[in-house]
Image 1: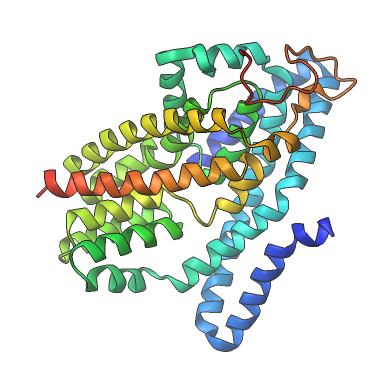
Image 2: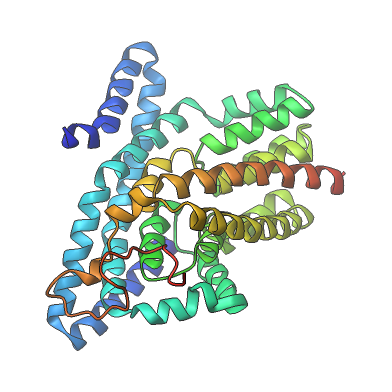
Length: 160
Length: 200
């Protein structure tokens, strides 16, 4: 709700200012918007479908079974991979991470899960490639994954 | 041929959905429900985002973005990119077209990695939820480490993309404000693409 409010108030403000200054330029802005939207639409739909599939197949119960079952390095790596490929809203992800932590998962595993979840977006990659290019997407996500593993390692040591 | 390639992924996904209906109906229902929920959210947000992006392309001058977020913007540019990212502005896919637009206008790659990273990993409302469920020490430590990692990543990716720019992306992303007849001045020489260094 806050999101929609923020975006639409920004849009309202911008549109009014733009219309007051110049009608033609506002029309040009709409033209650019329409073109960009059409160009991105297929990758948007792709992302939607992948998000639906991953969330449909990987329910919170499945994830806790996968992450909670193993211990040690393997569990951390596993959690990092699951975090990277799923896209879970934070309102669902953090309670899940909290309950996993209480039920015996290590800090390292949970921080790997949380950090890759927010830093690496495999399901949104088609859209990232479309708008920002293959190289950018690949570098950002792969380095993000490595960084997340390092962060998890440090957190595991510091928050014993 | 190009049309087929564009819709290859959506078609493949539809096929997976179709197969799932027979193999695992409950998962198919769940997936369809989630897809529909996200579709409603996207349909509400995306048009607004794209119009905002269009307005930005038209009204915000290139030299301003370059000055605020470009290579020479230094600490203030990084701080601005970080601050913009933490605002409560929705899911990450919203940020991609915005980031592309900012890069075309001269924002540095380092700052944009920082912007995208804080957008997805350090959002204020998200941090609130994190503190509540994982505690303040966990959240604070992750915050500091993530911010450090993002800065290093930004500097590194900037270096790499300078050494070997993504030519394919540059070709398909000319500055839309330079379209003929728009009367927008641009400091770029024809044929020069965003991301290429202005200095030799």
